[in-house]
Image 1 (cartoon, rainbow, N blue to C red):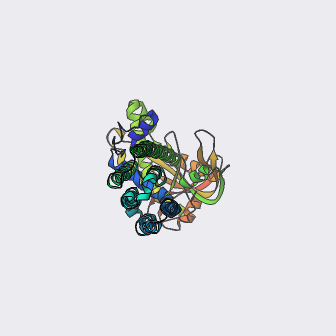
Image 2: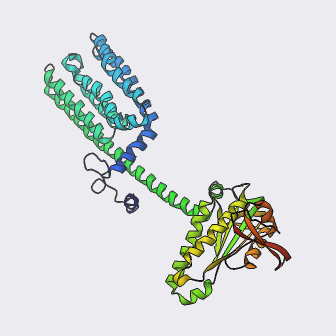
Length: 437
């Protein structure tokens, strides 16, 4: 539906380009259906009020009946009770129908619910001669209601207007003789009311449709903005940011952090064209993104040719260590699949550590949700002091895995800024030969 957004921005959404000239319906059926459904959802309560008020107006005309036709007022009351009130009440009650039914039939039911009583009233001089001099006022009033008060689309309001006008002409023609001046005056007022009503109804319909298009455009832009935000931030953090929460900062007592670095990428970059280099890097990290999403973990960021993921934040989960371990194995397998042909020799070096972190959103432009703390530093050191093609984990990770994966002890390693630390290599999900040495 990108075309209608462009039309709204360009200011050229009009009947000659995107709507039927006579009915004002959108030429794209799906858009017309969406418009009618939205009108049904937002307008049902107003619809019920409108036809309830129309029923009240029918009753209020009883006083007018008594003034202009005192001898026949009881007959007019009977006509209102048998025709006008039931029709308007039925239309009002139809506002409680199921949404699908209301969307499909409301305009036809509304046109009948108002048009039939209005037409019967317009032709009433045939039976009630005293009404002939006053019926033009009645027709003008009904035309005003048809085009403004009862929420009919332009095409249905026009149909009601034509029927009422035709009934008025028939009442004049079939009723008793009336002075020519009175006929001319009445016809002029009726025609004028009809023309003004048509213009008002058309303007209302056009306005509602343009308002609908603008809302759809705003929804489209909001969806794009939300999608962009979700590409930057976790959903729960994005929602907090949209609610205006500032600052966004949390402490997590225990998470598992993974760093993955593509090994031998720099020599490869010297052999490839810039276009091919970006293509390969995009392939690797797009694959990483897909796998991370499949494991319901949270990507934090990419740093050059390194990739950072966390388990257990911002959504707390007790199996964060096992989930990240499974992810690490899947990432390693994925790179092995990609490293063929000209990419032979590519490998991934992965480091994993478990511990507490602080997390939050920083920045006003190009902001990001990030992690801080010794856990992050240790996970990074597990990666940088690791072995190409291997997954190196700390003792904290081994404890949380609880024998669920096969591990090989690497012994103590010198870690920059940390001194000597024991480390293990994660080999597979098969724990039958696990060793924590």
